[in-house]
Length: 258
Image (tube, rainbow, N blue to C red):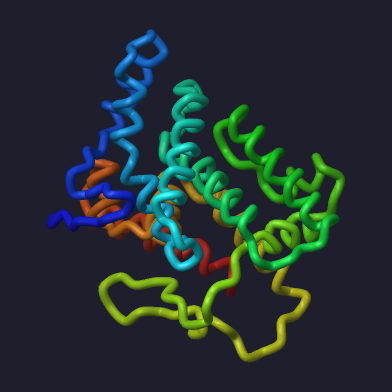
């Protein structure tokens, strides 16, 4: 597969080494044993993960060098707190932590004014999510957060949504080599109704019921934006297997929406 150069913060992704699962495990073991170079190797072997995440925010930040540094802070936190005993992939653990640092940086530089009470709920939610991930290795559900903090599910979702940066209606949200899909293509003409939240919550539950590998593939494909071939290389399986698992996961989610 051709390796394309991406210039962000002076880093050429074509030259970045991507660690295999076995290499990652070995380096984490060496780091725990006090190897002074293992941590650096883990950082250098996961820079592409940081770059792939911050590219999603290129239209919301004028200085990608700063955003890259922020993403690396999240990567370092993930490396320092990752526990092999949780038996989850490092990328599954690291992505929400890197995203958390990036979103916190963008939130603090947000030009839209949000009410203090809504911000308080959002900050408490983000703090609890980070503590929960560090302790359990997975993100808590919205219901778990609402129960722990004493707010309704709607309050939690609304607070988190308030921190999102505004985007252009003509921003490209998906492109897999064919026609580009823009945000305006996904806006429905009908008025929203009370079922929207129910559908969203049902969809979240359906995602939780997918296998870890299916969730990983959907996250890598549609959140980070990797190709099936890149995911296949990372999982050490064929592109056809990735395609089959992706299709199976999407079909499972479609059943919820019928």
